[in-house]
Image 1 (cartoon, rainbow, N blue to C red):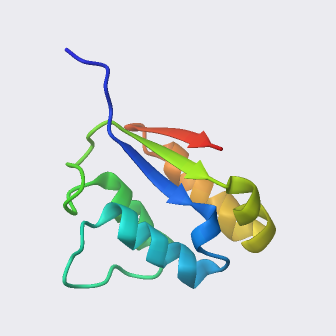
Image 2: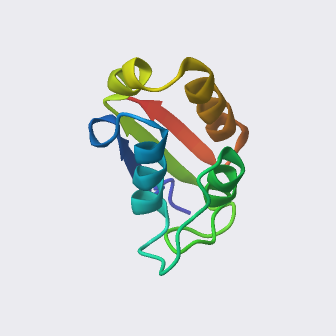
Length: 98
């Protein structure tokens, strides 16, 4: 059995507000769906559970958040903390900030 896990990269340089964050999440995780995901944290959690085209439900994955420092500067602190909490609560996800 391989230890390899697919890596999905969120790029903090591609957004500067919550709307842009959701657009980035949709681009990275939904595999060009012909409908838009909800623009809320419940929908974000649903996407992370899998099954939207890029990975299966509860499949072990890596999320790398590049340019995380920029997101710390641009996103509201409470929003960012909740996003991180949601990622870390999904036990099938290894989370890397870079």
